[in-house]
Length: 364
Image (cartoon, rainbow, N blue to C red; front, side, top):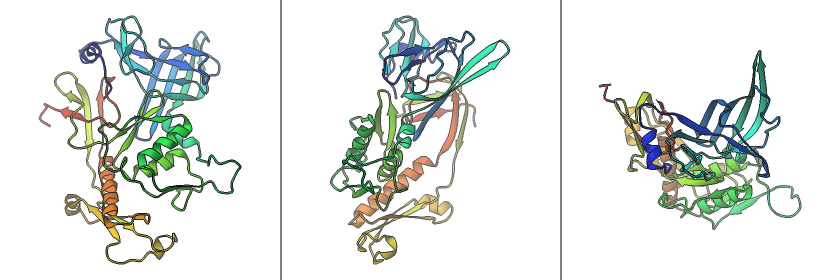
């Protein structure tokens, strides 16, 4: 949850408010900026697991929008008119326009395409923007070694998952915040044998997003994009305190809520461990008793069937480690299988992976 001022928290919950959007574009070298808050006609902004993107339509009737904004970046700030003169600090969770508006910044987006739409008496500029996960997806990992080897390869054996992710993000110019209270007991503890562009690579030359996602699947954690080109580790738990509550009969009010419950498939995870085949892969493993860690959701199995999901992890050397890996996979599947949507006024404070509560007084 973003830290907002008391005035902004109070203002966004009253019945009638005036919204404010700050939309300042900055060139790659930081030398040129364009501030277009009054030109924004529509803004559709998505913050999703492993993805951020937006489409912005700007009023350009006077042809005063820059002709080529490709590569420019923006940290969109959302807020409301509070009447307070709060200083603007780029990227801050609580900032203002030094006049009457207060707002909170969101993670960086880059302009990937620009279109000009003309019609009688009207000109609009359409910008399509993408975020930090897309940058990670666009760049393939290559060795920092001198000269172009025939196969770029790296293997980690003594680094924690968190240390590997931090190193990879640093390659791109991104950073990883301190873990704080978000440890799952795996991400900053386990030191897996992990190969880049090795036998377990998704493709011969993996991109940074794919590599980092493979690392995250070893854990119960997620990455949240932040302002300032930073990521934060998040470990969602059922015991987490509620960050925001939305009500059907009072502020913070919602107009529509849909919750979808799905069967968990697979609901029984097996992790095959201990590869005695000299790295030859799973068909050559020694299938003896004790070479499969597991984790199961007995409630889901009772509701339907025992649906197995098998993972190979030949680098693991104990059944206990394989059980931990299976538990992490099952936890991730359970976290990602709930779907739904909430329709409400824009909440400047809520972030991806926050825990929200819905109170519906309509007897549904």
